[in-house]
Amino acid sequence: MDIAFLSSAMVTLLKAVPMTLLLFSLSVFFGGLLALVIVTMRVSGNRILSGFAKGYIFVFRGSPLLIQMFLVFYGLGQFGVIRYSFLWPFLREPVVCAVLSLALCTAGYSAEIFRSGIRAVSPKEIEAARAIGMSGFLLVRRIIAPIAFRHALPAYSTEIVLMMKSTALASLVTVWEVTGVAQRLISQTYRTMEVFLCAAVIYLVLNFLILQAMALLEHSLSKHRRAAPPSAVKA
Amino acid sequence: MATLELLGFGQNGWGALLLVATLMTLAVTATALLIGAVLGTLVATAKLSGNVLLVGLGNVYTTVFRGVPELLIIYLIYFGGSSAVTAVGQWLGYEGFLGLPSFAAGALAVGIISGSYQAEVYRGAYLAIAKGELEAASAIGMNRTLRLRRVVMPQVLRYAIPGLGNVWQLTLKDSALISVTGLAELMRTSQVAAGSTRQYFLFYIVGGVLYLLLTSFSDRVFNRAERRANRSMPAAAMGQA
Image (tube, rainbow over all chains, first blue to last red; front, top):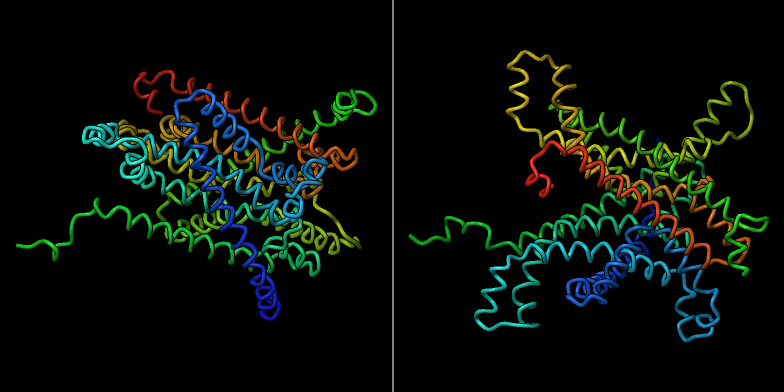
């Protein structure tokens, strides 16, 4: 093991971490928003809307992310309508294409996770809310959404760890994030194992931090499930 | 119809190549799944062994290969494997670069990833076996091997089917990443077809549709397998599973 090489590789790779984090946070944010739209359509009861949502989920969960990303990156530019539209200055950027395809893909997976969370809300709670006169958006905001989100949280944290790993594919559409830089380092130095070790440590630390943050969130959202600590109980 | 000709089986058509590529994707995924089954069984056994060292090793395996991007693992096996092969070649007196065959490297890399997911599936399935059944088997004098063959394995397989279905889907989609090694599977062939005809949109859509066919078809196969494996179970338990 060559410590000098390891540390210089680590420094090079760490410089690419902001790009990985940017891809990750933007695609989780937009993917989450889109997933809310899709899951609303899916559970709306309207046949056309829920049919569209089913189709969306089927397509984006059933095909590899890489082909979706190439479709966005190489495919869209083929159409004059897009090339000459106001959108082109954005869609020309590899980062925008990567975020777009990551967000579209995770929205399909997240929508299904949110739906299983919604299905876990007990009908009795909804009935109770209706009985005291809640309906529509108030019912969703006060009763369904908080309970569904808490149920969906464990599966959703797995999904966002998968998202962190998926950002690696952006390197194949020329975005220089950690995996892309690692690949370039490997082909320059032929020291596969050392570079891999550094990159793996970076991803494992990032994923560990994500899981810790999600566990903290879950902990703070399920206060009611824990018994009050003995000191809080007055004699 | 220029589009039809491009996708057809004629001289300028990519139909035949895409068909072969789809079969290649199936072959590399199946190989990866088998490699993963062997590794997954070993890792699950290690994690269930109760030996501190083995449990630790098993945990490191599943944490690393589930937590690091698939692409990075493919680079590790493909480039790392090639330099290892080159080193062996030099030792045997062969000068120059030797590459690992892309099928072997790809199947091994995706198999290692698949193994880390399969390990958790098998571990979960083993833990789902009722304790009483294991005790009963020992009580009537079955030794470890017989118990494994008659009681443990059949049930682990049955409980593992839904999880294995998920792993198969995951492995099928991961196999698209093997395209970076140059193996002419579905992703790579769509890429080549798209590049040489400049019909990017068309060929990526066609490639995507072929993947969708593969995933939805295998979904059916696994559903049927699950129903068949559970045919002796009471209907109520089946509804739950």
